[in-house]
Length: 608
Image (cartoon, rainbow, N blue to C red):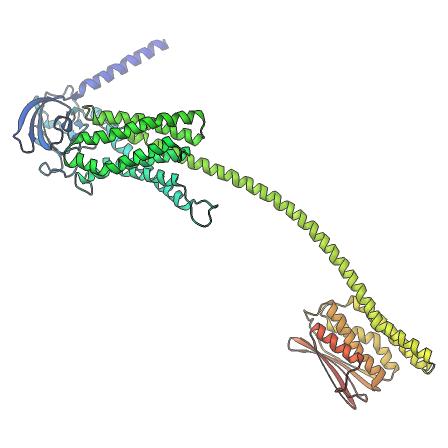
């Protein structure tokens, strides 16, 4: 049952299609009045299509075609006429009524309206039992002028035929133009921006992108001619431009294929390049000869030479691609093979055969080159991305290794620094004990050995020795820059000694901010300087009052030790203690000033 239903549906569809075709009339018989430039009109019966360049090569002229047809085969709400190709300029009349006009019939080499099919609506009230279609055309030399067989019928059926032909010829061409332009601009941008980083002294660009970009732009101009009815240049100048664009596309695309294969130095490829560039250089004079002097066979031979050159090259190119080649080489070889076959077909159809309304296929097969170029760009991008990823992974592993080595080295350096710090601290302690404690113990021993010192003198020397030892230990815990804590520690250690010596201690220390540059070693040196000044008061000044003063002076600290003792000659050669104070002050970058007279001695230390 289901099979019977399918057969019935198929039969109905075939009958409907047959009826639709029967309603559409293709008008092939016409009477033509042909007027060649410089000759009298000649009338004859012709069968359409009428290809002007084949029947009257190298001549311009005009023609009027009278086509008689009967009433439509079936009644319809509206009718239309579809003409695949006519022109270069034309007028269409039906029963004495003008249906459509494009271009000036009297102005040769003007606008070209023969590039796209024409759709002409026909009102039903214009149709009669006996109808006459009158078509006037103006034809130029080498512009494929003439008239294809008109198609008459119901609007819906005729529009379907017209839309298919228009989309194939015009809409598809627009897509090819846009795609070729975009691919060409991208290729030129890649050529301009992508340079070889290994050649730092000058920019080295890949000529493959330049050749591919130029080829696509040449083809953009050539194919867009289909959409330009009024070109920017008059004929035949515009015809020379479009034909040269074809030659430029063929030449650059051939060199592009050679570059993709890496055959720049291969002898067959070198000869192929020389041949294509020679043909391109010969193009302008040959094209001018063909179009200006009405010799279309010259242009046919020029295209044929290109076809023969590419036919010979494609065999070698494809054979090498199949044997041993990169994927990019094989993709381009496939595109080249298809385009050569399609190009040979177009060359035969448009330059040899009498065919008139056929469409070129090369404009569509050329898209394969754009796709091949896109494939090459994507493949290279993936390769570069893979290399960059591997490089990043390798770099990351090397960085991790270097970080581990650096960390190990840092730990070793840190350990050495701590060891050096411990050694420096031991050295300082030993030096302080030698200069301070050791010196006082030696003095006590000499006092005892001399037998002249009293017990009180020896005891006082030993007490100084003990104070020095305690201060050396305190110096290990001094806070960097904290002058207040340093003075407070000295007061704590020495105030009992001042009281035992009947010396009144006056403490005039204000609020002191930490001094940033006074690190631990500088604080120890400053402690020794202040201790030396206080020791001199205890041992030599015979003072009754001692003042310790400290205040902020600008951004620094001013520290003074003032007593009311007997004084001394500050201009005399300094003794060992004063000389040591000056050396330590110079070492830590502080200024020391000493002034003394009977009743007042002041030691001032300025810490910037």
